[in-house]
Amino acid sequence: MEAEGTASSLVRGPGQRSDLDLGNLRRKIDRIDSNLVALLNERASLSVSIGLLKDASRKRSASSDPHADNGEYVTKRHAGGDSLENDEGALFQIPAEKIKAMNVQGPLTNEAIQAIFREILSASISLQKPTTVAYLGPPGTFTHQAAFNRFGDSVTYSPQATISDVFSAIEAGHTTYAVVPFENSTFGSVQQTLDRFISSPVSALVDSSIFPASASTNSLERQRTVVQIGAEQYLHIHHCLLSNAPSLRSIQRVYSHPEAFGQCHRWLEANLRGVERITVASTSAAAKLAAQESESAAICSMVCADLYGLNIIAHNIEDLKTNTTRFFILSQAVDGPAQPQPSPDNEYRTLIYLTVDHRQPGSLCDALSVIKNQNINLTKIDSRPSGQRPWHYIFFLEMEGHMDDGNVKRAFRELQAYCLDIRVLGTYPNQRPR
Image 1 (cartoon, rainbow, N blue to C red):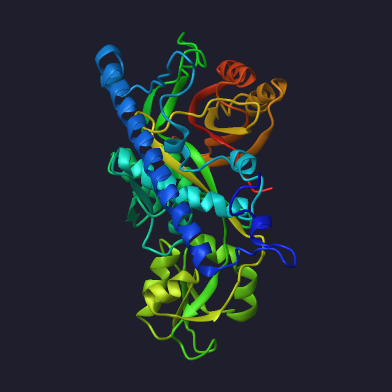
Image 2 (cartoon, rainbow, N blue to C red):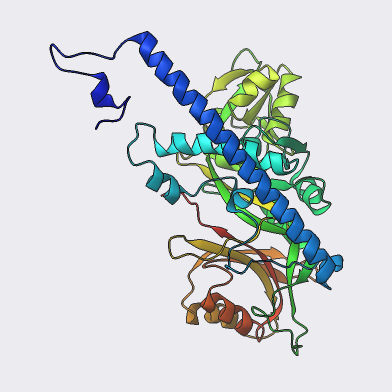
């Protein structure tokens, strides 16, 4: 028997009854809407129950765990092995594979279903506890857009003046989550983010199953930072030149973030060569300044035109049309999302940074050989000055694999012989667009 409301029941052949009556269709939609609301509320009630279960688990941990009061990061799991932190809280997103499996008939696209679930998750998680998200502001930045794409409309957004301020907000516990730009496909890594990872305070010793507690001859510090990466978010970046100047020729100065200048270098050289370029903390801050000066312009998103009362002088001025930025979703290790468990159906990445003794020939090569010998693929390497002494560097390594994978654990243990210190910044699902 055919279900009511299917496409074939609505369109009949010649001489057959047709249900294509507006009143009838609207009544069917009303019934569906009522059922949807009832199911959404049932789902929200279950989400609240999950929140209560997590709170009870934390209270039990605080009373029984001797390390609970000193902020040591402990991932609690129930007897079945699943995290008591639900994946919704960790990611605010249904995995793409799950969406694809559920959406077998359409006509809605997987992207449309994901957008709907984003708002469902946003509203449900906000019922568990007030949720605040720090981002590089003011409103209208690409970080703001990435944050909204992840967390939806039911959370409170907290704009911060600098990337360092975003880290400070999550470290101090003023916000539940934070969003920071990590790298751009055109201009590379965001140095302010790398430097702020380095200066972020340490939380606690990593699980002894990953790093044995025995002392090492080189005083290796095997610890997590307070801030941990829980997820990544990708956003296609399209820059506009905004200004209230009467023409391109009358522009005397351009404001923007260093990353935006780098991503639009060729266009600027071809169209505004010799015009003063002034770096500011964010693209939205650039728009605010340009709105106050008739001969100034800003490189920022199209959204800023309406937000700050500017005209769009030029669209899509980025050098590469594939221009994409990767953002990290951060939380506190002591109260953030539990690290997702390894699964054969998902790909994970782990980010660490380490230092080696540069005075020992081949010390970095020896450390990298450990990764290779465990058949782990490195997806990114960065270096930054350590600040400890001149010409001493910290190396960021992003690798394929989950922190709890056997070969990753073995690699971490073996790295002790070659590294002065190691920091684990997080394990997160690989969500790079394919």
